Image (cartoon, rainbow, N blue to C red; front, side):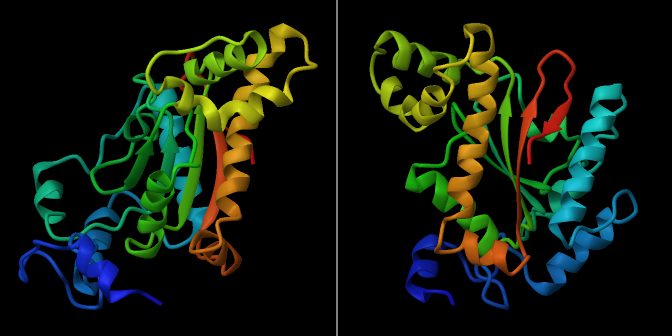
Length: 246
């Protein structure tokens, strides 16, 4: 299933004691004993996650605590940091926007080692580097949930609407950054102007969900085997609430 040469490339420079672990896992991915230790340390606060549905329930429960202003901030202790020096097993991947107002560990009230976060303006996954990061967490770290997290009033989507509708240009590589969002911006062209931004934000999330679901190398087989669940969601800036879109 796995290419040893690719593994060697990824762990190049790791020492035997702190790098490659038993069972064919990469440095920081964890041996069986490491995963057990993490599970033991977290079950006193949260149930250990083994399925995508459980992972989603844990995220949404954490978001509810955040919205109420009562986060537990569990899993952020010095002991937790030390515990994860040589192992990690994040239960969920968040493909989110780089927006400074949307920090996944905070809005979902999760701790160190719980989430594998991939962030880029516009929360898109067309770039192979971004897709490869997501695939890595599924293949090597055993993540069981993938959430594409868009957010209200997204500047990347707003800029893409201007690019599509008004021909607005942007300096540097900003225009290239917006290219993956173009289909979502085009899809709302016939809507009243007041509704276009919100609709495009949600459509962009669903476009990324569809793209990731059809990624044949790793993600699609995992979804088919029910070892990975993928969902789309939108974060509301004013309330802090995450609404599921799929």
